[in-house]
Image (cartoon, rainbow, N blue to C red; front, side, top):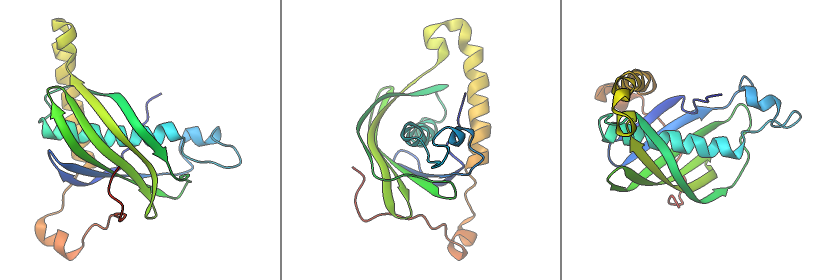
Length: 177
């Protein structure tokens, strides 16, 4: 099963920072089991939401050079609160360091101004053709699909409209840890 845990990219500064939104609804099929009388987003999916946000930042920063961007490690993962249906998780991921095909991030997820999850993530980028040259076509198909999905998730407003109707994203006073 595959979960898309990014509903929208609200802010994007290639090479630096991204803010994404995930609105949790009762339509999420995993909530039937987690938990039947107290549905909340599983912690592992909160971590995955931060990973997906960070992966979008890698893709844009590298101009979609790699078909695969995967989690290599998650450190200092801290959970602060439950996320219930009807709430929106605002994920902020800041690029800390990029070294070859590995990128390090400080990420956090916030609900109603309260940190729900935070972590330090390391993502690794590669192409299928790096492993087997005959897979280069798979890379091209995947990258084309990712570009299309990105264009759906990120629709920046023209500057004049942006000033008239700013996007409000809660930003807690505490720095990303």
